[in-house]
Image (cartoon, rainbow, N blue to C red; front, side, top):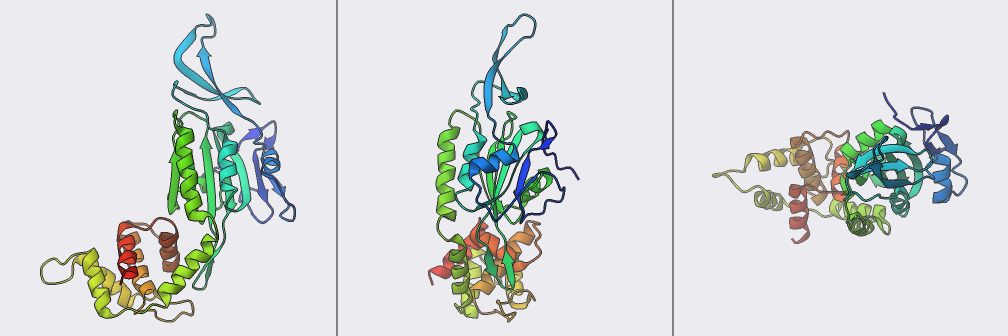
Length: 315
């Protein structure tokens, strides 16, 4: 497995709280008993440097290359990538500062010599069924001329290249901005969307929503009508999709409440069945049905799950 963490003058550009256990054992460990400002964390992670966009010049004749620029890491004076004139540098501190609004910083580091800088914060935990689900918000900022600025939330704590890729692939919600002239205005939109989703006690909001759905009973007729509105009939019977979801709702062994009891006959039971069907029909696997349903409720519901929740809420 490759961690791809940057090594600068014998120091790994990675720092983490002592509550995190990175598999690679590299970087600077920081006490969770102390308060660390963003700047202090960045210093410990070796990220207290900037990148500038500089026009490329030929070595011998010193002729400027038209519309060709190098992205130069200022502390080491290394070129991290090349780009055109429309590219705008995005300071990685801005991305790290944004995610730090919503949780406790767990990790920070850089990859491939500084071509990508990442940070990860832990959000409020969610209790669903017997599980306590950890949630992380990660920011990854590219300095190589090709990698976007990305922010995503998942249940993976980022400590290296592999976990960054795994978290991004499994994320329920992702935000991104390209390094063009309007990256600042695009990132403002990202900030607004993040604030909308994570400001306040988002964990409690989700748990309250789940409790409401757990405690709201629905009849078989409501289930039938809801499924037919999402997946209209084909001929005289249920569509294949509605039939499959109905089967999951009635028979799946993991459709249970927080005490392990059958929740057939509740909004949460139907929502879980739809979530399960949508995720499996997309070949997205998960270890717990409730975890899947939670992630869709909190992050980015599939169109079918969104329709079912909307139909149930207006009954």
